[in-house]
Image 1 (tube, rainbow, N blue to C red):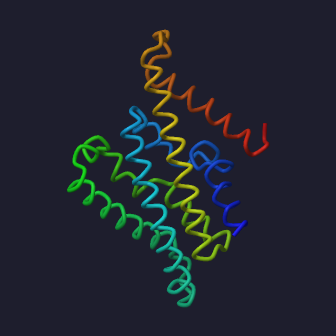
Image 2 (cartoon, rainbow, N blue to C red):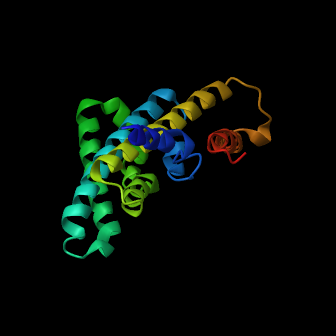
Length: 191
């Protein structure tokens, strides 16, 4: 139990997928303009990564390895992730149309979000069991949600600041992301 807690906290904070491993940068920068939208994207990513960790773990352990076709893992994992994202997209379109519209093109991009695929491949590479892989997925996705919501909160506050013209827009967002990354690297003891 203690090992699972360490994996979850390590995945969320110490090895934050966005700020330490630099995976999933596209939705991180694109959807972090408002806290509400960032929270919705964080929730969608939590769902997709958690469920993808479970299903990819099952498929790898009970289908790919016994049939000795584990070399197909990347293709199979992408198909599983794409199916899950389609499910999330249909659910949001019917139940939360305003969030669906706010996420726009970034919702289908979860399919190609390297953070989602990265978790599935990390679970295989580290030889995690299904439960451990799901815990790693939950921790990683919560770390993604934490990072994107913090960034959105900072970006909302930045709008009211007097920023020189050369730093407005993307430059100040990238500087903010870099400073957040430095802060999160502190958790790993690298600084």
